[in-house]
Amino acid sequence: MNWKVRLRNPVFWVQIAVSAFAAVLAYAGLTAADLTTWESVGALLCNAVRNPYCLFLVLSSVWNAVNDPTTKGVADSERARSYDTPSR
Image (cartoon, rainbow, N blue to C red):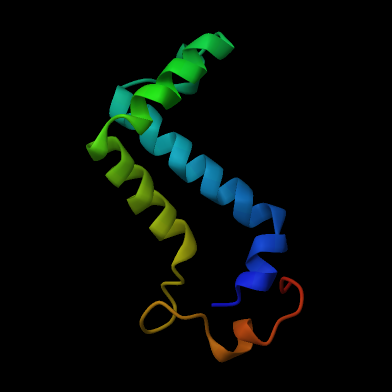
């Protein structure tokens, strides 16, 4: 995988954060509208970290965000590995 380009791409980080947070919200049976204070967000994240099943859901979501389904296995395509910056 072309980690150098992925890690410098802000879209990658947003994709990871949203997919992980969505998994936590879904497990807790909440929507983003239910989180009205930073305390409630902190409590939700602390409870998620303490729960092995919830961590599994987060890791599954992150895996889906990282994996390129258009290639065989878990590697990026030759073209994607040749990028110095994200493709347009």
